Length: 225
Length: 282
Ligand code: FES
Ligand code: FES
Image (cartoon, rainbow over all chains, first blue to last red; front, top):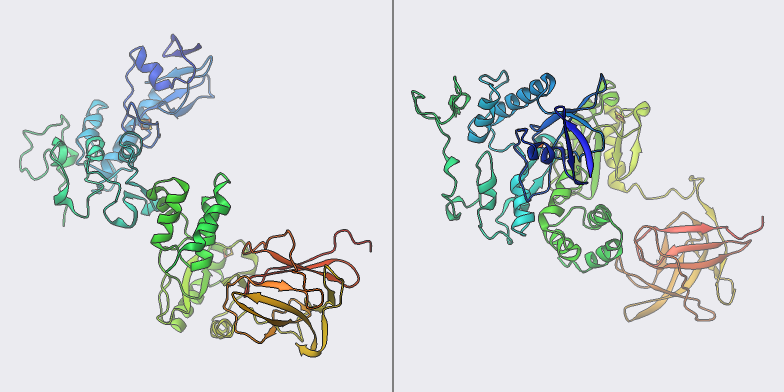
């Protein structure tokens, strides 16, 4: 057993447990986006940052990938952590404002504005769909391609993958809700399982019935074409 | 296209963990790019999903999924070369070749690309063509570089190149001298050996100048074919245990007069060769 201290509380966990699991087991909430039980931790979204260490030697780490260590001191909601999380959410909103998942996380963290240039990406590269496809569906039809600015998720050579069974697992886990494996032939996809497919309040004049409780709602910046 | 040799490449690297990049590099060296079907073969043979291979192939800039020209021309646009005027050089290349960076000429001769720092900043602006470095390039030299490349950079100036020296060799089995003083190659006595490939049998004369690849044969041999070498005196096959560091074909050993062993690659057209003086008391 490994003993560590989370927010002043002594916790003991099995070896190999991550800080995230340890914190959740004693009821401290940590927001996550790219983490999902049953998939290997990937650490892409950075939302789950926590502060570890004491004195002035503290640092931020992603709790979903950091294994618990003997004697570790963790703070899940210190000023520094909250500040970092809010910034991350703002950045996520800046790239993917239409995502209901991101909007919900934002409102929980009381983020009501984002200060960056608004973009309308359809992917935040969290890798959930890639891991879903590979680890749960045993297909490996989609994956990361390219690097840096050109990094994207999709099938090799942008053609329909031979190993894709149209299971829809990728759409199910996608926080930005994009059709992946079949996007070259979207009409053949089995879809409809995901209610988030249409952005909640884009295309409305008044945002009375928006699904998020943010005000003003960032999703309302309609894509200009 | 046939992808049988991809099998060999994959087999050679499959034991090593992390051999994927090596495989892809070698496939690219063979085909000048990574053909889609080749990636499929690699995925199948390595038990990985195609998308993993594709991810690696698209991650690294040096891999290309599009066919490339015979000559790859990389102009450095790194910081140091940039301040020394590399953008002008790149422009000049684009104008002379009539293509934009990242494109290939219509005749499939040249592919032009820009890179970020080749690690020789002090010599900038740097241009690399087929592994040959050109330093301190001025716009006026661009035309000359292109024509030099068209003529073939590997052509060795036998008379002026000091890296070239003559060797005298004999058979590793019977120790019979292999030199042919009547038929000259490069104006020097040639090395005469018997070769067989496919169903043909004949004699080949190699240049005795170490570093020159000139030969004289009665037959047209196709590039990339592995040829068996025999001693014309004792008729024993000249084989050793070593493999060519470039292409993996078996090396052909010969004894150098004065001590040492000369090894040349048995693949026709491959330039692998080495001179081994280990075990010689000087
Ligand atoms: S949940 Fe930990 S980095 Fe995304
Ligand atoms: S900047 Fe060109 S070699 Fe470094």
